[in-house]
Length: 288
Image (cartoon, rainbow, N blue to C red):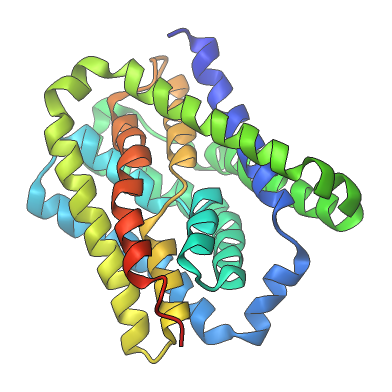
């Protein structure tokens, strides 16, 4: 795969985020003021609990350094179109899901570059090079916050356009997302053939832990089943397209094709449904 193909990955993510923005509106974000407790618990769970659980599992299961970094990169990413869609199937609190996705996508402009720089140096060492935080922050803004904001703006100002084209754009976004997954897997097919077992075990273990803890802690803190299972979904399902695009950005900066640390996000993009579907089946009836 050539450098041009890798360079297109951030543009694909920008389109996906634009489609996500079209499905949002200002009223979704205003939900935070109406129901602050579920949002705060969900926000902390995604921002803090998710990376911590991922790091603990890495220390226990000891995957290869490039895979460890790939898993951490995935844990730094917010939810996305998929988590909102699965929340609907779950009969969860969709406004809470959308609010968490919206705010986490904005916050990720600042958190992802810093956390990624730390994980990059920690797991890959000096041979992985270094990350320019300012440059990565600007790229994060251009491929996440800006297209999401543009999508919300068009939704608010041009509702007729949104209604006419949103579903088509969302379908196109899912096709492009599938393309990202194929690119990640094809670029590292030999590594995947040798390491697929280790990666899959890590992903399944991580998803099970995230779903159980992501639902259990909010429930223990007094949230309703509807809010708790929504937070469980948001904690468990991450924007793997962002992790894949960021892998492309890091690969471009090091003059290589999409690297092996993109594999966790690529495989996760498939395996997450195998764990999410039983979660939905078990908890969609719990609405108090």
